[in-house]
Image (cartoon, rainbow, N blue to C red; front, top):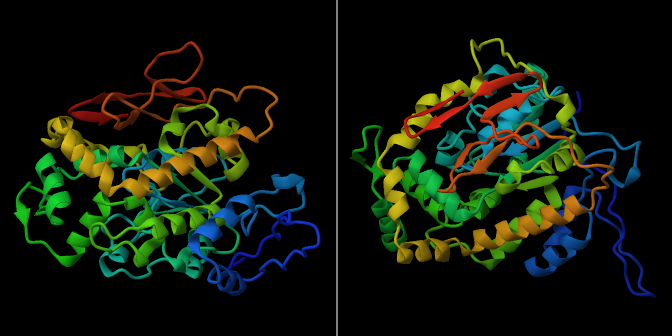
Length: 409
């Protein structure tokens, strides 16, 4: 089986230069690439990255290169409360995508790569390029997700496609509060004092550890950037993220990721154009029924208890009453994340506009939409002229019931 620590892909297209200048040789190995990156400032690297192709090519159709190899594995950087369940469910229903039984019950996450997992607690590597390929060879799965943080040990693996989702920072924080039974006073305490009492499963304040504190700070202060930069930024104190970190995150997403999806795009039919171009997923390849050897029912049903906890705790009402001053404080502490999100939206729209279209994309299965409280909920059918609440996949349909006390398929 093909394995490796470094991506080796087709060379960049040359950047246009003024007459008389010779084009410098393109880096071909990761060591050359890192050495070259270190010689310029983050701002200059970002400007350069925006006009160049990444080191790798996602699919053979890019630039009309029919002989280019397609990637064998796909790695989804699953940022907490950013539509990861939706992406995982889409992957499981796509012909040719294989997910092992453990992943099917854990949002497609690799074992040990769940939120609050050991990789976060100890700030060290869990999954590496080698272990990723070993897992593939052992289980024959080809789609993986990581929900802890992005680390160097699993970046730029050979023959791997990378993608992620970004969500508006304030919406992500509110969703996180609901999921973890936090109220507005907890949010105010964290942003004003830089600390918060952790709650146990019964809502009681429990003793706080260093790992709990670091993880909580990251969740409320430019979480996207911390997550992308990994251990070099994830454990920084409140207010520790700077413009330099923002630039570095943009460089990583530009140079190393094949697709970055803003979560509002998940409800648009045109998303399928990007999914096909970057991931090779097609609306015509959706499987009607998905079964795994260790499952007795749909793999999303295991989340019922979690969803009930998210939607029945006191935070559901509390977050609606966040006052303008506290909201402004949230925006202030997440300024760089907001810039990153807006940059990702502009990049997505630009790439989407460059995809040739012979017709409107076919109506795909609905993904998600934002309700009036900007939380992620099940979508109604996207078929033109239909407003039903059925989730139709091929000839099958699942009735979705969503209320304050249940989330059931």
